[in-house]
Amino acid sequence: MLNWFSLSLQLNRFPIRKAKNALEEIKNIPEAEYSGYVEQKKKEIVTYHLKNNIFYRNFFGSKKYTSWEEVPVMQKADLQRPLEERFSKGFDSKNSYVGKTSGSSGHPFIFAKDRFCHALSWAEFNDRYQWYGIDLDRSVQARFYGIPLDKIGYFKERIKDRFGFRYRFPIFDLSDAKMEEFLEEFKKKNFDYINGYTSSIVLFGKFLQKKNLVLKEICPKLRLCIVTSEMFFEEDKILLEKVFGVPVVNEYGASELGLLAFQNPQDEWILNSETMFVEILNKEGKAVPAGEEGRIVITSLYNKAHPFIRYDIGDTGALTENSSAKNPVLKSLLGRTNDVAVLPSGKVVPGLTFYYVTKSIIENDGLIKEFIVQQTEPGAFRIVYVSEKELQPEKKQKIEEAMVTYLEEGLEVEFEHKKTLNRSKRGKLKQFESLF
Image (cartoon, rainbow, N blue to C red; front, side, top):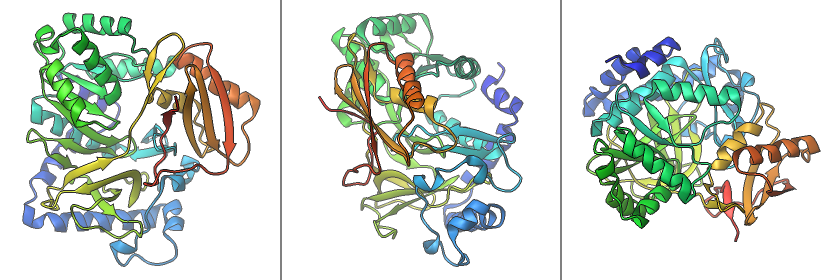
């Protein structure tokens, strides 16, 4: 059988074979030498961007690099400027992978990875999935994600689905009638695993519970469910493992970085120590002892196209007391909760639907700095945003049209312009919030 997924990456000039080999070499570094490997890569990536990236050199300041603790912590707001200003020397949108963040923390921006770094991200995902016998080149995925509805974006995602052995269940309608359609697909197709947004998969699980069904009895080849992008609570895990009849594992990642943590068969949340350096810092930017909660700050050790160095991802968590340089384990993760939106027609959609609305209106000029979406009553939404100037009527109309495209007609949308947004005690914004 051809390795279609790896082949598609190679054809798009993402060197997946080289990345897989590099990942194996890193994994084979002995525990006693691993701290040295991490320290070397940290120094290399800072030195590289100070030499080759004007944006990072200006951000870093006039002082020289002397110690890691003096490296400034990067916030998402620091990256809200045109991508062309943030590329390293020799990189541009033509020879790099370019993507958009969801803005789930209220700070949307466009980012870049060099091709090798992007391939390493996929090598990391494949390595973790193989803990459960899942192979991205062969295993068939039931994908609970949204999809862009513009023609070009839709076509691109469908092509990627074809090469990635993925069948997509669009999450813009999660009514019982749509769930019945989902169930019919599980009866017809030999899915190996489920992957997608937590809230959507939990809603499907509750639908199965009402019908007193076990999914593995309907789809015997099913062996795993992976939930991602939102908080996953223990009661949801118990429910899903009962109605799916397979293990359910939690994946923690970020589009601009890649895989950050993945639960192993022993139910430990293993952090990615091969290509990332993960720190837990207090409000003063100092590392906290293992076991204590703090801000999760990530350094991408291999991204030469764009700096993500001591990058505050906007989440709060803690490491286990027995974590080591080679085997750091995430003890807890706070934040990333999303509510469910209810529309006048009765359609139920997850809060992350607004990810696609957000993507459709993001521009590279960074016009909208921060935003939240609030549902004030069924069918009524308030978009609270931060920008230098109030949005022009045509921009508001574009947002309203996007909400019709992804949700339904007849919605009431109001806009509220602010200079700043109120934050939770943990300093995190919630992109979507139901107020009724």
